[in-house]
Image (cartoon, rainbow, N blue to C red; front, side):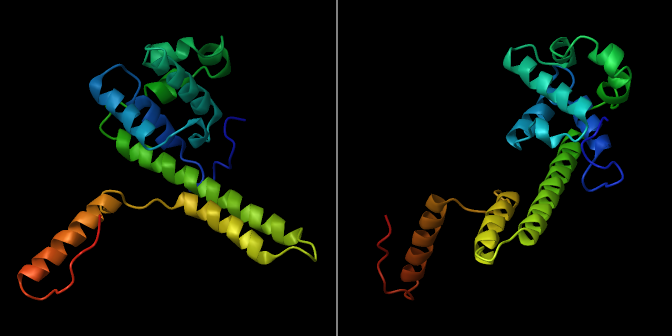
Length: 193
């Protein structure tokens, strides 16, 4: 078994994106390392990979990077003996060398994150179903709803490029109040820190 999810479920499993991402960050090259760094910034972790071979390889790639031996050679040297020769004989050709360039790496990364979120969403749905079916007379549905709300909130990420930090919001508000006062419209003095 090479995948932990049903490969016929495209929302849950995106093997092409996993292959493409790993291929797009295979070499110690500035463009390819940039793709890898974007993955780390996005919080990508081994559990983002549904394909077990890709998961093992990414774990080894993280270790190689940590030990200043980044690249597919460093990652392959940290995998168990026989990984690329016996267990996954086509791994290098079908995954590592699947892309000639890293230009689509960011696109592959977004697809991996999307599939991972769908798997988390499906796990939450299954948890709800199990909790409802196994609920006792004393169980409160509001408790389950609060737990589910916390799980779903973790899946929702605000668009940080369009949101202001609290400090930026305070400064913007103070500036707009001052501008309004200068035009003669506002009569309140802002008391914000």
